[in-house]
Length: 150
Image (cartoon, rainbow, N blue to C red; front, side):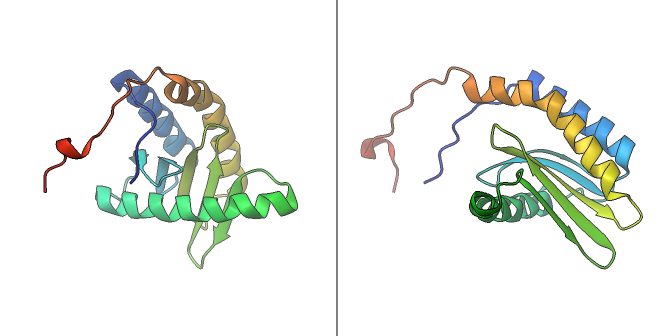
């Protein structure tokens, strides 16, 4: 069972979305997504992708890739980044220190350097909010078998 261990307030989401808007305007990526280590979409923005299910599938795949990357990072001692280049599109993923990630899909005409630069800039702006989200006091909620309906 997956239990979400954080709460995102409306003001947090509005701030995150404003950062994504600036990011997409600066980089012209096809999709930018903020997700967590469980593959849940926090927010995404795309001029092309309107279906939240498609964004969710991308977030789940990214989380799986980052899980594998975490194990590789123990060997090569690198930052938590992933880049793959396709024929026409590329993907760049960067994980924050608070286990949220920014993932972008972009056309081969978009320079990787600008995606990396603006990803780092966005993370610097988002990390304080990610820290607040992760450290926000949580209400303890207990589940008993009596509460479950079968």
